[in-house]
Length: 247
Ligand code: SAM
Ligand code: CA
Image (spheres, rainbow, N blue to C red):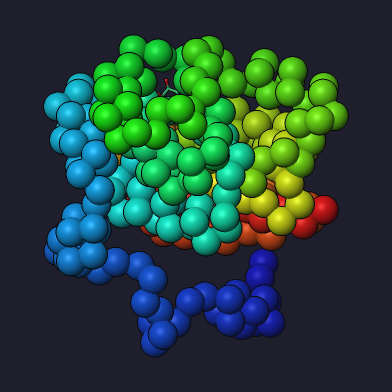
């Protein structure tokens, strides 16, 4: 049973309404962000890819426009040059990345599905950034295992975006921590998993949300306890946890 001291402790750890500004209060507020600062600044190619993706049956998988803008900004802030993306779909986050990198920048992009990547590829080509992309079709884990074997890949990446099979994120992390440079960033996407991370056990959840939920919860705990990284969980999109390698 929790004593008073424990209760006070957990009260002290709870956020206070005063000064609590990070969670959006309404859909209208999100729409405001999109219409005021995202859509007016969205490059034409990203708009075109977003509109094409919206017509695709699996469009729920795409990165949102505000998250694309965030990725583009952070890549420029850290002067990223050599990057990786796991989980491409039609390429919205890939294009956001490719546009942020210098002309000789590189993205190793992996997905088990080439068809969806090829839907967006003509738009990426038209934007003049396809030469930065090295697309590999297939599961990412064996590729990472192979890369880790070669010392020259250790610490080679400035930025890595992980947006694929959530049940593998922990496995990816154990490889990626070697491949990202000290001071570099790994971004794990969907770490709030549709808000289900705080859903009560009997909450009605869509099947795939329920299935992956425990993996996301485990990942979040593991990242918070990992001394090799500093972390920052942002409520952008479906939640993105930035991990900065420190050793
Ligand atoms: N970042 C993308 C965007 O901006 O549109 C969205 C990626 S989508 C949420 C997840 C992708 O991960 C799917 O395209 C799926 O084919 C891919 N995927 C699933 N399992 C994978 C694996 N083992 N290795 C590589 N990609 C995988
Ligand atoms: Ca995602």
